[in-house]
Length: 146
Image (tube, rainbow, N blue to C red):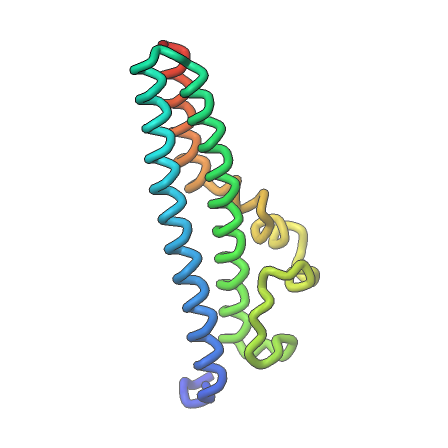
């Protein structure tokens, strides 16, 4: 399709979706910052106080942030999927539909796509596994060395 086929309403809908995606990405960035800060603080306190339970609290907080970051990534993936469907003129998408996080949005997808758009699938992504896994391993190693 040519660009002239994009009417103003469709472009506005895509802009609304992109604003949500940008906000979700920003939230994910903030979550990662807080995760590093708290984990570092708890490990530092654990080393200073020679109390490994503080490092374990740091690991527990990392797991909570990991889950929250997985939620944001899940929502971002769903809104990106919505944007792609709007871009391709999918007739099943109502004008200005923004319910990408609803369970009914992914019902028509196959099993692999549903996994990628699920909370567990997003939390198990390589980027989150490497980021939070490295922090958790470092915190656990520090707790065992205390």
